[in-house]
Length: 373
Image: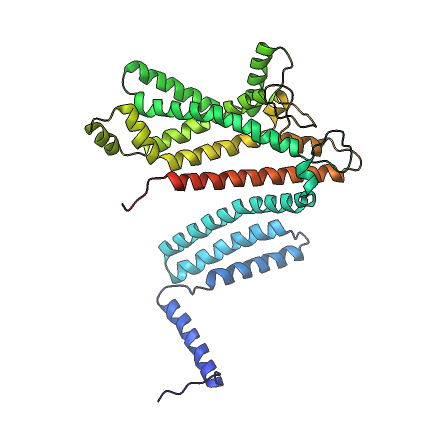
């Protein structure tokens, strides 16, 4: 018969503590630090560093965390070297450095999201999404005109840049090796794509402004001009990402299609593009996220208009980045309503980008080749 106890007796608790101590001793004897060592060492290091800095009157949260982490690395390296050996110590150090770099990269993002969300949610109301800033001074008003301007200009930019970028990538991967002339053309194209990837956004704005001023006259501004400026920035990103995805498609798939008598253009449409559609969609979404927050090119080409304008061919058109910029740098009195609208616009832009990423992931999942058939 087995006897069960609903509560642990003092002897049982003592035995549990003894078994835990025994496990720790066994871990140390077997050449391995206990699992709680890193956390305990990190906490003790931060506390000790904070005490030393407070003693000398130079306490600061950032400095405490940095010096505490450095102290943690040194202590863990010594402990691991003594107990586990030099190879395990080096492995632990590399792991902690990589983890610390990840956390360090994550902190600004979390801080940004917290700041924008906490300040932007104050104006997340019906008026903000249903009214414009036409004839509004001070409190009130909204950004519906800027939201529509962002969607229209970004949509036109996508319609311009995505076909050009994908067709250029298809040429670079599928057709550039057929003749020496095509190989030289592809080399020149790759060079200019690399150059365009690194140009400042203001240069794209100057290009579009000059082009449309030459065609329609000096001072011409419209949503189409802004879309062309953004397309100059978006095309090289689409070309590079799509080219890499097309190169990942195994040549065996192409050769199998050719062996069945399928022409090259149909092989590209039916085999190559469907195989790489997930990566292509991801690259397009990244390219859209790259240009949707641009301000400088649109200041020169699309301008600023406080009312609603959905005609991209005529008149100035405001986008969310431009609207947020002007609300923040040119506030009236009182300043609080302008700052609230600026942060609300930034939060709206973040939500739009997140929605686009979600749509892109769904499309990539839906149309990606299915495995296991």
